[in-house]
Image (cartoon, helix red, strand yellow):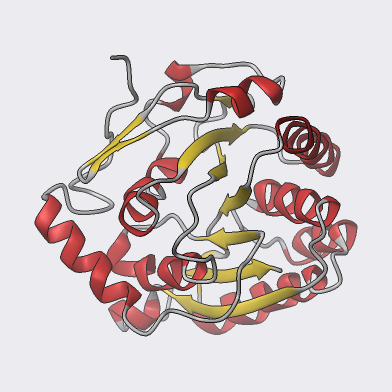
Length: 262
């Protein structure tokens, strides 16, 4: 069976299944809450740095969810927007692809472009661990300008409506990169503030104004707009952290946010 094999296991997350399960179990301790989010923003750094923040995002979704996770991650290598239509391998087992939803999106399929991209892969072990019956539709986003995000959100909304799928949308993104922790927190929270009102043009304006190096601002924007199309009316910041919280070095950090649309 053709599948997308692990590319960054042993680097971004443990390749040993037992070690991986133990680490994920630790991240999810006390992470449950009463939300049942329609979409979430999740970081995609190494688990040692951002795993707890990621767990807090996923914990805002009912753990019994067995529908489809529509994943949107940025292309770190400059590839165009494309989807994957094959199952994905994780150390905990295979995650099946929702072929019907993928076909309904009307987005080009390109498995080669997906093969080394970590922004989507790091989500898969968490999904397999927390939601073992769920399927995925992975979208790698190339251009991240406002128009591209709007078009992608419309494609997602249309595909979900036509297929009748029970979907949760995952926007994979880190926030500020390699600035002092105080600067990262101030700037990232400034940008996130615009999302509370679903004001995506203002979100883009604030990112540009302060040159905020969030790598997945396009996926975040597309997720927010698609969720709003399907009844999302409230955004909550569950948690914000930086890599400095783990390393103790605040001089050049990466910012991570767990954000939920309800």
